[in-house]
Image (cartoon, rainbow, N blue to C red; front, side, top):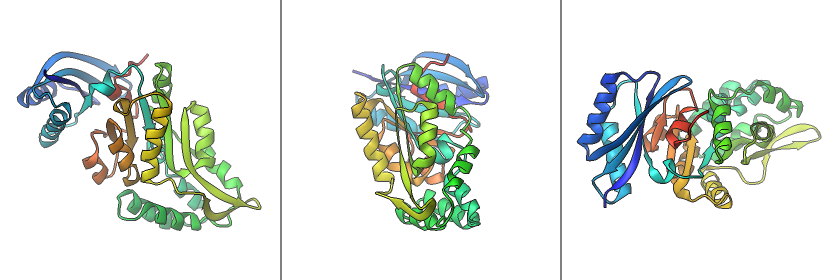
Length: 301
């Protein structure tokens, strides 16, 4: 029996010639288009294709189709192939990285600016996100530069946080539709906790900055939230929510997100480093998290 999946094409505009090319790519690699629908979203347009695949092995067929689309890119248009186990699920689990994903900034760099170490920390952050450094070691190195800062800098930095475009809409629309939304960060709980409360996230986890006598000690308390932790909490929280892994989506931008993205039914690279884009199931190359709603098949209101 043929298997099915969904393809979602999106871009700031979707010219008819681009859609014609995408249809030809889909059908030329063994997919039959059963239905097609289009929708306009804030900042982008999307077309959703319901597909029947020739192979009964859905995983292999989806992987083959993704490879074919990657080999023949359509200018200014991205196409994600989404398993129907996620796209059609009545309840979905969405988990996001925080720095440079849920929010526009890297919190460690905002904190380092108070210590006059922003350039040094930014270089280490970039290397860690590219996967060139062990994340835990890089985190300890960067946090050490914050030693002696007054605890009050956390409130100062928290006030400067800017959500990514579409982030608030993604969370509110997904939750209004009955889905579960979480955030997990290699950053800091003192920043994430108030943000999670503001957005109404169902789950949130980050590192705890150690504070002694009202000052940052330059250390973190407890285990570091690394890539293994991110994958572990995806499995744990989705299970606690009663949602199968086949209905999960993970969104991130750096190497520390790769295990989480691999564990999810759909791993999405958000304006990500090259190595992360290559490893991802899908990409969002617009500065707009709203695209994730279209990928997951969550109607907007």
